[in-house]
Amino acid sequence: MTHRPTRSALYIPGSRDRALDKARGLPVDVILFDLEDAVAPDEKAAARETLEEALAAGGYGPRYKVVRINGLDTDWGAADVAAVAEMACDAVLLPKVNSAADVEALAAQLPDVPIWAMMETPQGILNAAEIAAHPRLEGFVMGTNDLAKELNSRTRAAMRVSLQTCLLAARACAVIAIDGVYNAFKDEEGLRAECDEGRDFGFDGKSLIHPAQVAIANEVFGPSEAEIDLARRQIAAFEDAVAGGQGVAVVDGKIVENLHVETARATLAKAEAIATLEAS
Image 1 (tube, helix red, strand yellow):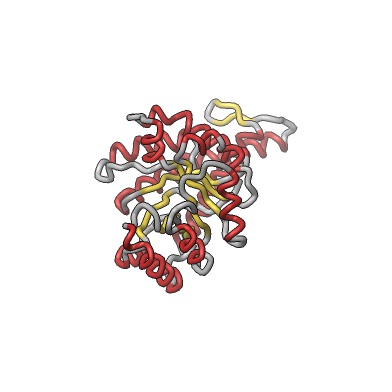
Image 2: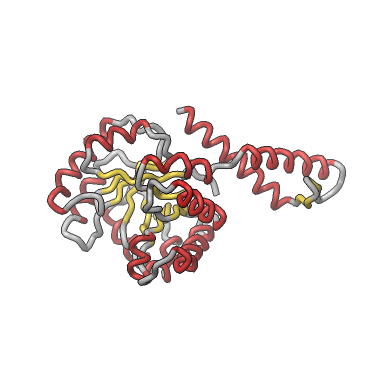
């Protein structure tokens, strides 16, 4: 699976000119332009216009530009869809996706825009495989706050089955998988611990609520210098072994087979993609 880097995915309110302008200079991989939770009901219409103007003005570079709309069953969903059809964005993020039918309903109205799904309801988690398999579905974003509410859970540990279920579905269908937010944006230690856990699970990145969280997410979800060095040495050792008629190599006392080399090549490709993005 090859995607552009998605280490950090920052929510930006579509109604706030200052935040929209500041986002142009942030070292974030994905901008989640929000028309849903971050926008008050009486500001929804103005937010659409503000966001459309900001995207038309450009300046966001090669970052993923994803617009989260209101649900199709809300008073604002239809107008959001019509507005997104005219916006210079890369994808649309649909909240509270319960089934592939929800994705299909949006796909029928937006035939040319890739779709991402907020995975934040029990029904959605149980239907993760069919949602990920929809041909228009490009990404999952975990909505852990809403999911915790729906499950009546008090800890992240209680959501591990849900997180891993969505990750399995995403990997089975080559779909981007972004972990949920960490609410205590001033708690760097807690954020790092949760990013480490999400990375260990296999997520591609972390959704964020504050620019101060970007650096840690980028660090954790990007390959370290040690990982890049190991990847290079694994590839070189394996190629030498194959040239010598062997099917495996040994690096740092550990067996290196073809599957490890595939992972190593993916690590180097990710590092290269990040370097290209950061140089833009």
